[in-house]
Every structure is written in structure tokens, then in C-alpha cells.
Length: 245
Ligand code: OAD
Image (cartoon, rainbow, N blue to C red; front, side):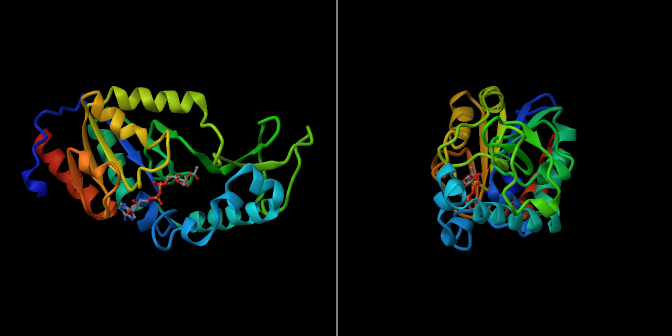
């Protein structure tokens, strides 16, 4: 569908809008995704790098991989897609971001009301008692211990772990009660996050997907745009802004 043919009259500045994002929104910032041909999971075994068993087996391999990713993220900048969301959030007062990303780029772009479903790579916590711990960059590649004796790890969700209850409940509530959802740059494969666009649509939301590739949600999306987030989202913003004002 052509952008100019999209009609947005049904929405107002009071519409409730959700931006649901995955690794693809950060791809144009130079941050690798997981399941694309050059993504992390095509090179590495996720169970070695993102699970309790992997951490137990070789903690410094795991910590080194997160430290490398953190360094790449430090060098990266939010891209046009993240920045467009900040503009959208000025237009739509009642809007939230639900992200599977741990890179913190939404926050750096000035987005607000952000649910980080899979945690944040810049935070650390104790693997036993859960206490948050500040580490300096020097210490991030070696195994540090909490006062309780537990191992310190990045505050990200690993395979087999549960998402923070308050965060996932808040995200489902926002998805079930929104009028418009953008699902951007996610392969829509990892549950419970992948349920969110289906949940939004089931409850009456209009759902627009942005992804250069088809996903398990594409056939059901109200509009599925095969494009890169950083090139299409600014154009959609201009179109909606023009139609609403
Ligand atoms: P994936 O790597 O599974 O999917 C990335 C998606 O982004 C793919 O569908 C790409 O086609 C799309 N994409 C690539 N470049 C894009 C661009 N410029 N604009 C828009 N889309 C683009 O990443 P996620 O769906 O985020 O979990 O993966 C979900 C979770 O799986 C991650 O949070 C991570 C991973 O294991 C944890 O670490 C817990």
C-alpha cells in the first residue's frame, strides 16, 4: 500500500498508541539483530550466551559477549526511527513504547513511557538475590560477586527466564487498550512478547507492521510495510501529522 493512500482520520491526538519494537529498529544504528543472516544467533549458540546453563559453564565468555555488545551500543546513536517515535509521542499524548531491545536507544532518543521487556544491558544485578549493582567498565568482563556471594550478571532476560511481572503486565495492558499499534523490526517469534500485536488486534487496535521481511504476524497485520524502519517511519509521521492537523 502507498503511504499517501493510507487514511488516518479515525485517529486523534487522544488515540492510544503503542510502538512495539525489536532488534530491527536498531539495525540502522549499526547494532546486530538476532535472526537475520548476519545476526547473533546465526553465529553463536544462544544457549551458551543467554541462559543460566551457559553462564554457569563459562561466565567470562558470557560477560565478554555482553561487554562487546555494550561497547558497540556506546558507539552507536539512535536512528531516524527512534527519533520519529519521539515526534509521534508529542503528537499522541497517550503513547508508550514496548521494546524487546536491551540497548537503551529509545531512552537516548528521548522516547518516554518505555517498557523494556527483556531488561537493559547497561544494568547489572546479582544472579542470586537480584540486587542491582553498579560496575565500572573495567570490571564488566570478569566475574564479580555480590555481598551475598551470588554472581553478578547483566540485567537482561535469558532463555528459560521469566519477564518482570510488572513490566509484562503493563505492556499487555497497554497493547490490549490501544487504538493503534506499530510493530517495528521484530521477527515476532519470542513469546510472550510476540503475542502483543495479536493481542492488540484482537482487542480492536489497528496494527501497522514495519519490516523488510515477512513475519508470522504479516498476514494478519492491517498494513504490513516491507521497508526499513529508519526510512519509512519518518514518512509515516509526516503523513499522520499532516492528516491530524
Ligand atoms: P530478530 O533478530 O528475531 O528479528 C529482527 C527483525 O528485524 C527481523 O524480522 C528483520 O527482518 C527485521 N529488520 C532488520 N532490519 C530492519 C530495519 N532496518 N528496519 C526494520 N526491521 C528490520 O529480533 P527480535 O524480534 O527483537 O531476546 O528478537 C526477539 C528476541 O529474541 C530478542 O529480544 C532477544 C532474542 O533472543 C533476548 O535476548 C531475551
